Length: 153
Image 1 (tube, rainbow, N blue to C red):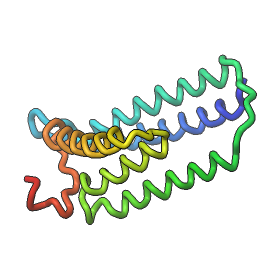
Image 2: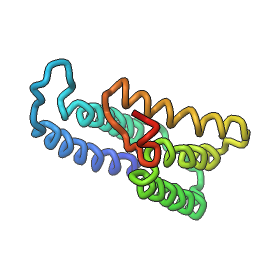
Image 3: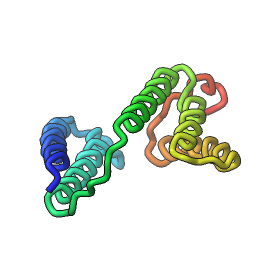
């Protein structure tokens, strides 16, 4: 039994329960053929519940690995990833989703070990454009256009 995983799962399940309660309080939309404002929060709730349950199962029933943790490397990597994400969030309203996400995706692909330049460039260009089109035309959600406002309708 892993005490850390069980504790983390219990906290995450409590947070998920609060999030589910708050999601249930969102108003209903009366427009036909459109999702309610609570549609995506319910997806988040279900995903958080499944992942927290998996963590609880892992903590209770799976054998704990006794590999030594590289605390300095892991914590500095986490801080660097957080800093990159904060830069992305700050740049998002000014540059727009596509222009802010291209370097964000490229840096994270490199950060997680991708070394091939063609894959980095292709992924950094295709992933943000795909996500923008998916949200705009698939979900009907407008992402910030920023500097490309005149080019993107």
